[in-house]
Length: 123
Image (cartoon, rainbow, N blue to C red; front, side, top):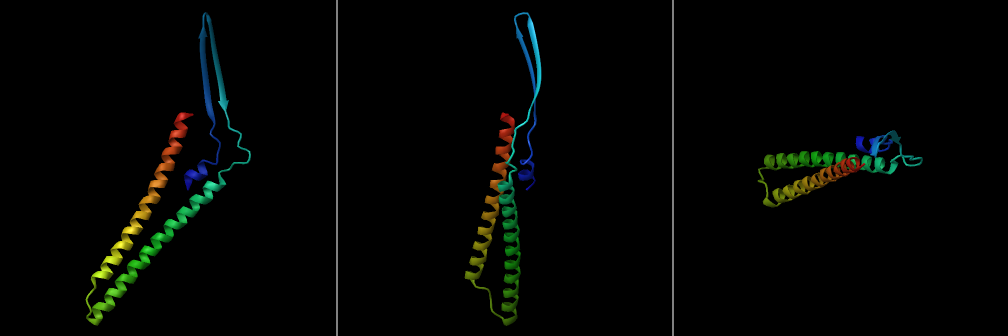
C-alpha cells in the first residue's frame, strides 16, 4: 500500500556532468523532474487497496472456518461420534488452498517491489 502511494510522487533525479575535450574542461549540474500532470497512480493505489482487503477477508474466512471446525468437533465429541477421514481431508485441502492464495499474493508483492527497484536502478 505504501509503495503504491510512494509511486504517485515524482522521482527527482540530480545530474552531474564532467567532460574533458582536449584542453577544455566542462562541468554541468542539473535536475530531472518528470512532468506527470494527470498521473497520480490512482489505479495502482485502488488495486493495492483491493488486494489488502482481499487478504484481510481471506484471513477472516480462515479464522471463522477454524472456529467452525472446532465447534463441529466439540459437538461430535459430546455426541460420542468420532471424526471422519473425509472431514479432515476437506479441512486440510481448504487450508492448503488458503496457504497457496496467500503465497501467490506475497509473490505478487515481491515481484512488484523488485520491478520498482530495478526501474530505479536503471534510471
